Structure formats: C-alpha cells, structure tokens
Length: 67
Image (cartoon, rainbow, N blue to C red):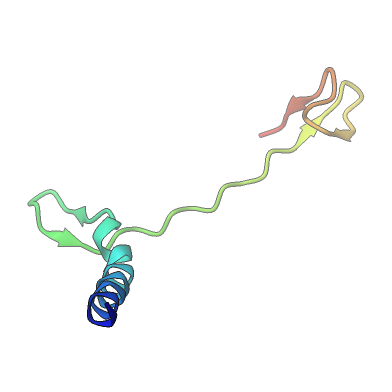
C-alpha cells in the first residue's frame, strides 16, 4: 500500500512541476523557429464621461467611454 502511495505522490509532483511548460504556448518566427514570446501589453482601464463631461461609472446612463 505504501509503495503504491509513494509512486502516486511522485507522479503527482512530477506532473505539477512540468505542467506550466507543458501548457505554455510557444512562439515561432516566420521561418518556424522557436523564439521568445513578446510580453503582453497591460490592459488600459476604461474611463467614461457623462453628458456634462465629468467622469462617471461606465454603467451610468448616458456615460460614454473616452479614448
């Protein structure tokens, strides 16, 4: 029993250690060679203004997003 349990634990640790690289999407250049993936740009928060030009929640009626 303890032998099969230790094997299961070892397999679980091995899978947990290899999972980030196994699921990572590789980036390739035009020739098909693997390259370093570009960093993702951080998303800009959306800001909205109301009809009077004051900042408001985007869920407010009449609020429009600003560029």
